Length: 207
Image 1: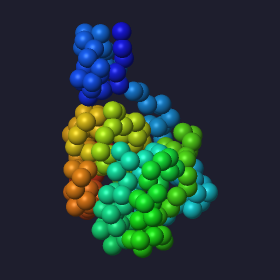
Image 2: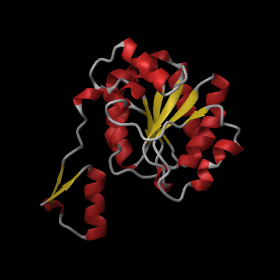
Image 3: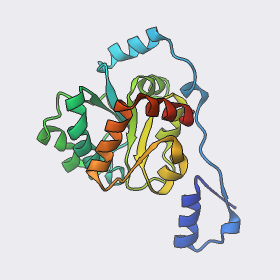
Image 4: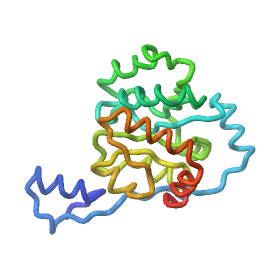
């Protein structure tokens, strides 16, 4: 028997490895209860101070490598974030083959808007989600997308891709965007910060 983390992963196993689907059981990832636990205002303030987090920010969580689509994420953010006074916090590290994309921070004049605290442990990460305007994950491909369920559990709206595992997991409880269209990603950011009712629906739906 084989456990797959999503239906799209099961389908990929059948298509590319030729394995009979009857051998495959889909079991979604879970999320630690700490992500949905209440966090005091004092603890949030301490985390904000410790990591020098801005008052308003979008958050990206995860390692940075080609399928994460980081270049388009930065180009979309450049159209929205600075104009609205919203920073971008990158909770992750460069893994491989994205040096050119990371150079866009300088080329797009985003240095004063992008905060890079590096990899954040699970004991602190729920506070990051709780303070963020939205979590951005416009990946070209994800088999599941664990930050989606982490963010949703923490009451953070999600903007993610309209395909593969991210669409399957997020469904109608997130803003789904075309990851190959910079303007679509940017529109998702604009929507979540301009429509309070939508933001609240996403939070409730995610939880």
